[in-house]
Image (cartoon, rainbow, N blue to C red):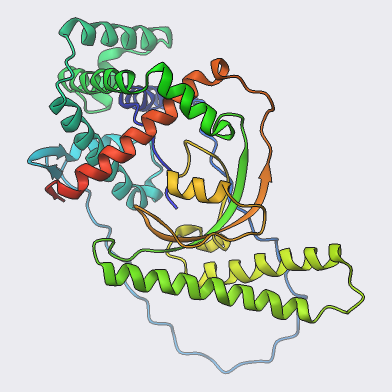
Length: 372
């Protein structure tokens, strides 16, 4: 399950610039804490057993090592969005912050992010949102001061990132245009209404869940319906498996014992199917996507469905832009009581900005001409 990326272009860019520059000076940058995946318990090695003497084996056939695919040329084009090119150098620039072993996995996500950025800027520009040149220069000056405070050479950082100052100005222009658009949409009334409707988004509440993901072509109604029926059948299979397990409990088992067994059976049955059938990388952990808040981590339909459940309840089939999901909530953590709107105002705006980005990109993708 992919988690959402925040649309703060300049912040992301500056973060990449800073992390690269600091790393090249031999100083460890502040770590980005990943969400830890559950690890299997270590298995003790078996005791040594005497081995029978085997006849000599034929020498193994040595297969040639696979030839690594060369990286695309930095002066190429990674994709076009309504005729607007996304240069390959932008992809390689982002990959600098990714371990080499993860490049193949990260590349499609980076390209998708850059495509969404292009769609977003095209949409906002079409709304007539204007940014004056002095505004761009002011933001650029702020960024230069931040680098100077960290004793980083501005020109060297740009060169290391294969970035011209004009390209940086273009990024800043897009960022400022987006900020103005969000500020116009997320006025005080809209923000307060958002907070009042779902305070759990802003009080630190967390949910932990597993999910099973199927990825049909979402433009193919027949394929989507087949996946929906398959997930519904697995849900029924899990419920039947749990019912069968509970039927084996002794008649003397009390309600607490039955509920504990129900939770255990539900978790095991769901994880087994997720491990075998889910299209998400989390399948290796039985579909576990770890803890996440109500907003800012998972796409809205997924988070909304998960937060509506109690532990060890399953959703009906949930559709997102990633595919179709069956979700099992496995735990919850209550947030801070009594959070006031004024305390959460900035976070409310971030949530609204994320929703705007998500909705605009979804609408734009449906009619955009995207060539990869």
